Length: 434
Image (cartoon, rainbow, N blue to C red):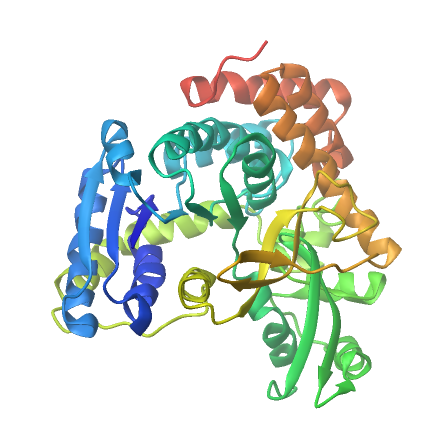
């Protein structure tokens, strides 16, 4: 069985996902193809994974590396699973561009990888690369599953499902940690807890939560309302207070998915809700500065080991290969799953995985206020896909004009000027638009 990892220069993430696979007994003799455009980072990942392979897997996996676009087909050839973790344009220059140019228009962001003007342009520069990969997969491994971890999850996964022939599922880890994060924040036990989550990626909803069969949402809300200290999850707690439900992704993410938090005319909201502006660039700089130390630990520690994580990839592959069912929160096309969201939307719902593949479950209607919030994000996601597929610049404008945060801060004229400025600044990282 061959697994191809696209974007393998992401060494820490490759350790988690591919280390998980080598730590799984039924997958131990896997053939791994590592692919990246950065030869040095690719070599680091290859060294690290070979080390883990010897330490926890007695060297039973075979690991090959492929660098550069000209070797991508060889990396994909014969793959049964393709794991995607690319970041087109990287921190420099593209992420910096996504933050700095909007600042010139008075538009501030926190993460800018999923929605907002930054998420929109990340999708626009990533989708052409994914479409190229899909065309190569259709020739080299047409029956392979494409496991997408790259953001913006809903736009990228939705585009792959609607505009290619590749079997695709989008994977995130916010679903797995959602309930525990909330319970720990209000000092409640996490054992014996069951929950249901559905919505869209990064804005899925904890629809119910029980402990030993008892509804614990009322007690959670009571304790959350009693908190008086500042903490890192204040935006999500406020969403839960006002709209009635807790949302899966972090407060710094959700602060830019809605129009209520980051506002020039109300700067006190930043302090009140503890919103970390420019958080993603800050994290990137910290990771870059710490990389040399991490690099030494990951690539030269001969005793390097790995324990299986909560990332979904290895569990999905094991379920498909052994026909032992496993439940995930997967990003799939909304074919009658959430009945008050658009059918062309990419939704995040419980899915059963086994030898048959991935079978999503029907959720039905979301509470109307939650569906309404989701639709404000879906509007921009669908128009971003439309821009990428048609190469019509007007759809970039439409996507930005319907984005909740951007439209709450900028006029129509300023939004269009901002889009034009970003298109010019990104240059060859984007295709030519009509």
